[in-house]
Length: 359
Image 1 (tube, rainbow, N blue to C red):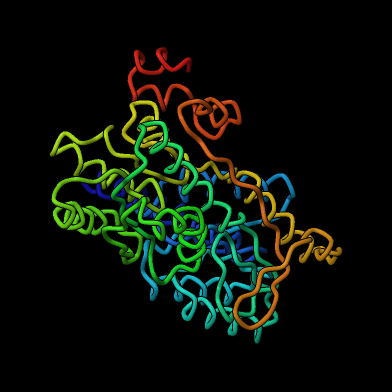
Image 2: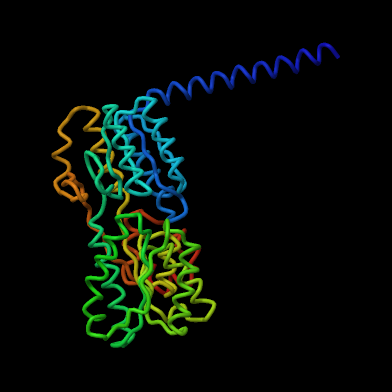
């Protein structure tokens, strides 16, 4: 019995020693991390975990630079805590897709005092202090959304249309830019009264569940008769589609999206979404990684950022990439680019739908 107890104790001790060794190794790696990346959430869009994380990881691995990528899961307090931990561990560059401008600007100010450079990733921090901004031309994203809705209505022979705006989070500057883009396309028709803007609402925190509730109220306000839903991303667009399905209106109403997720592309093929926007996240992740590596190695990062974006206080040197509008006709572009796989899209849309659309 004593031998058995001793054997168990030895196993426990060995396990504890192994665990201690593991923790020490992890701590050593964390302490030597050169770049910290904080993603905003995993709920508003699948892209943050399925695209941004792996592409950023691969880009830094190729450059031989250590990186710590964490997700704040929509919690501003958690976001700030993660940033504090990264700064305490001595990161040289902090890349952030912020939850809102005030909280992200506060982190940037703290980083600046510690001599740490910051990069706004995908989302611009208004009145912040980021050294660089890497994103897409977000007004152009909105323009593509508006043009897609316009083309869908025209194809349906609708010269008169009742539409709604289901905008992104009011605290995200990108949502403001998306709306600026699609409104610039659709406003002339609204002004001429060809289109009736039944409702125009923003969805707090890009919350898809709240988006569904808001859209249900919009549909009720429209008396159950709508021709188009200008939704700022696929999460909100698919939330609207779920509501439309209850009334058997899906496929009969033009609905926009953005992000080119597997679910979104499948919905394009089935006709539930009329159009979306593909943003090559791999290029965005590479752009941010290139800037961070240049800052760490002391090479001229400024040569990489040829654009400028005003944050309400100054012009931020920027890398601005070009988005692509997607309809049934060119879903295969996203698949050919390796952003989504045919298997993932067709599993959702069904093999029959994919073959029918030449996928």
